[in-house]
Image (cartoon, rainbow, N blue to C red):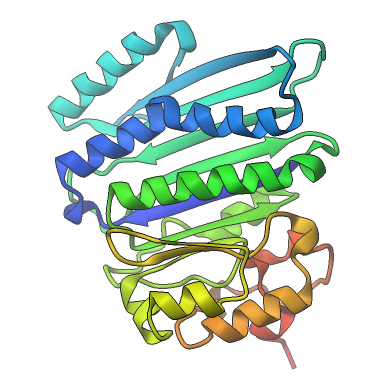
Length: 294
């Protein structure tokens, strides 16, 4: 099993109702499902596909999420709006799995969640997370389509509301590595930052300017895809597949981003470095970026 995950964060008190509505539309509308459909079209354009979907809504202060199946979509939206109008909405999520109908096992799934802090009582940033999980060796042939689809979703989310940060990365131990690497809930204040150099990364307008402007990023960055946002800033994708996360590729991207990149803090770094496959690198950075015990 391997994961491709996207996470972006916003400052809660800077998010308007209109921007939040746009993010809800991305999460619950056809956009997220389109990503999955595009991935499977690239691999199985003539096959009938089976899909399943589920929606989750969590009340502020509750420990559990209330889940709704796909046929209960309207009920899920009504419950979400009820909590939102009361100022009690904490999280809303959507997920689905897709498989060719002639196969027994599920081979790809996607889920996304929007963390909401309506009370304004915490500095925790609002976050949007989306992830793809692949079983078996399917990711090798689907990686380019998945990367392109998630890149487009990244841009769509970034255009919906002004980002503080954003990243996407491959991982083959999604729970431990992703939770450690993303560290979504650490308070970073309201200053934009560039958290490393990974499969995909968001460069805030200030960061793009320090690199010589978005035009230089487009023309000189050693990446596969670049999109300049109407809101300002740039989304860039280093490569399409974990197999392309070589030390040379990461080193070139690191050198380009060094004036603006935020490397791991000492207190959040692992004390030792274990070279393994590229997908297991914390944060997709190089061993030289981490402190070593003498």
